[in-house]
Length: 256
Image (cartoon, rainbow, N blue to C red; front, side, top):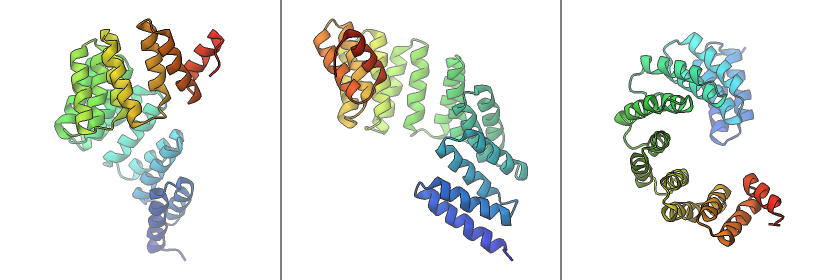
């Protein structure tokens, strides 16, 4: 008859599969673990994470609900649930879950960060910035939080602050492609196309197959009145699968 050691064995196998990116196998192992030990909280939690990796956010929420029903003090369960709700576009639920997480674990930087992103999506950049600052007070070396705060400042049209945040992000992680893209977009909003192109070029120097960066360069060259350069960038983006560039070129009757 299966016992607690068998449950642990299945759990450990699940962790191994999860670490290798084999989420289906991991889920099967975790399911076996909880069939033997129905109150095995870590199995539900990591199973929720595996479903999250697979993009099945409803199942992530279901697993997290099971975990926190057994252990109501599981801050990580509420945070993971908050992340799943965010990916489903339910920002109010994201905030609700993350508030629960920080009520249990006040130094939970990731939960404050999720709240910040959710507030930003809800059109409240001031609240978002407040959450990001709280997250950074706990984890001052998180490049992603600086990038997120830069986006919030950009929405407030505080471009100087936005650029400062993006610069901080890339100082922590010099290969943070998304931060260069966002910084480039902010320079576009400032009307500084030269700087914008420099940021987009930096992005593709790190990630040469980054279609969005070429598409953005095409837009900027269009704005600068350099159609030849713009078409060249749009073609590169289109060949890499960028839908906007493909649609643009098709409308112009240009092959890529």
